[in-house]
Length: 443
Image (cartoon, rainbow, N blue to C red; front, top):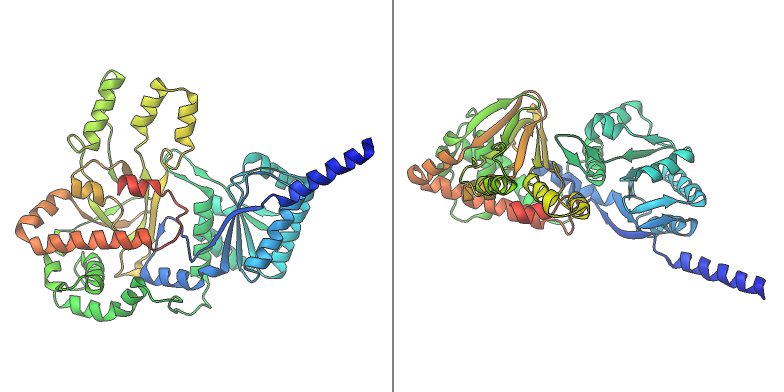
C-alpha cells in the first residue's frame, strides 16, 4: 500500500508539473519595440519584418523538464519559421538539470533553422546553471553595444551553436532593462541585413503615408526654408507630419520656427539638459519643499524641445531622488526595495536616439520633454550626448514665448505637431516593453 501511495503521489506530482504553463506571454516585433527612436523608413522595415522575431516571457518559478519542453512545442505551434527567438528569463528562479538539456535541444533546433536565440534578464543563479551546463553564450551586446555586436557577428559570419546573453545595464548614469537591450539588438539586426527590400508594412499606416510623401513635401518646403538652413531637418519633419495630419497647414508658417531653433554640438558625456539639484537646504522637509519648487518650475529651468540631428542621445529618468529621500526616512527597507523594483528606477533610460550624417536631412524627436516644456515645469529627466560631435536642435522656452507673440502661426504649428506625433507614438503598438508608466506621469 505504501508503494502504491508513493506511486500515486509521484503520478499526481508529474501531472501537476505537466499542467504548469511554460510561457506567460508572447509577442513579436510587429507588436512591441524598444525605447530607441527610429526614422520613418526604419519603422517601416521593422513593421514589415517584425513577425520573424518571437519574444517569449517564461513563467515564474523553477523551470523543469516538463515546462522546458513546452517551450519547444510553443515555438513549433506559434512561429516555426522565426529567425529570432528571445527568451525573457526575468521571472525564472532556477533551472533543473533535465530542463537544461531541453534548452540545449532548443538552441540546436534553432541552429538547424538558422534562428538566433537570445537569453535576456537571467538572474545570477540561472546564469550559473547555464554556465554549469556549458552553454556557449555570447555577451557582446552588453560589452560593445547592440549595433556593434550585430556588425561583429555579420563580419565573422557565424551565428550558430550559441545563444546571445543580454544582462541589465546598470551604471551611475543609466539603467536599461535586459529585455529592452535584447529587442534593440534584434531591431539592429533586422535593419542591418542588406538583402531586405525597402517595402511597406502589411497594412497602411500614418508612417507609411509619410514615407511616400517625403520627396514631394521636401521640395515644397524648400521654397520657404532652404535645405542649407541649420533648422531645415526639424522644419521638414513638422511640415511632413502636418501635411499628412492637419488640414489647412501651410509651409510658410515654418520659416519663423526654423529661425527660432538653436543648433548646438555636444561632446560625449555632456549634458544637454538636466534638472540640477539646489544642494542641501537643511532638514528633509526643506529639501523636499525645494524639490517640489523645482518640479513645478518655480525654481527649476524648464527643458527645451530637443531634436537629434546627428550623433547619439540618451534620455534618462531622474525623478526618484526626492522620493528615495522621503522613503528612506518615513518607510522601511521594503518600501525602498519596492521603489527600485517598480516600473521607474533611478536613472532608468526612457529614450535613445542615434543618427548618422548619411541620414540627413532627417531628425529624431522631439524627445519627451514636451509636457514640462509647454507647462513651464522642471523636467525630471536628463538628456545626455553619448557620442562626440552630437548635433541637437533646441527650442528654449523663452524663444517659444517670443514665437507666441511674433509668429503665432508657427507656434500653433509646433503645438499641433508635438501633440499629434505623441498620440501616434503612444497608440501604434498593442503592448510596450519599455517603462510605460513614465509616459503617463511625465508626458
